[in-house]
Amino acid sequence: MRTITVFNSVSMDGYFADKNSDMSWAHNQEQDDEFTAFVAGNAKGGGALLFGRKTFEMMASFWPTSAAKEAMPEIAEGMNRMKKYVVSRSLNEVTWENSELIKGDLISEIKKLKKQNGPDIAILGSGNLVAQLAEANLVDEYSVVVLPLILGSGRSQFDGLKSRRDLKLVECRSFKNGNVFLRYRPTQAQEGLH
Figure: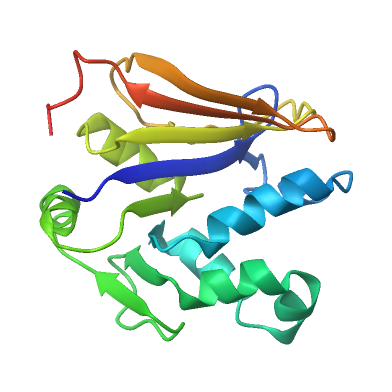
């Protein structure tokens, strides 16, 4: 069975988007070759990506561009190459290469997707999607990069989550630029509920 991992950057106060739904602050930080290599290594992986509509449209407007290919060639190559699924009620088609639209009941569609053969799936951004899949116990891992800044207000990737989720830390790594990568899995009590 395919796994679903959430991978987001968050501020010290726990927001993945600021009060204007902007996430660009997560990319305006001190240069760190080790962290850049870490991100590029993730993009080189053979996984698939799952997005909500807003995040998909933001990503699709940047990664296929020549600016993205010049600024971050390895990451752009990976983002464009990977299989991408977008969950949307309002879109009727997607044109970013290797993209597929998912419509219908979210939970049943994601359960079907997890049962299909294929690479593991990462969710980037997509807070509404994250909260709904977390509530349905369909997320297998939560990875966050905590950035050394405080936004003061914004949106949590778990806005709308109605019940508690206990997690266990399985990896922790810090970088020279102050970023800290944390990877968690649901505790035994919640595993297997999906």
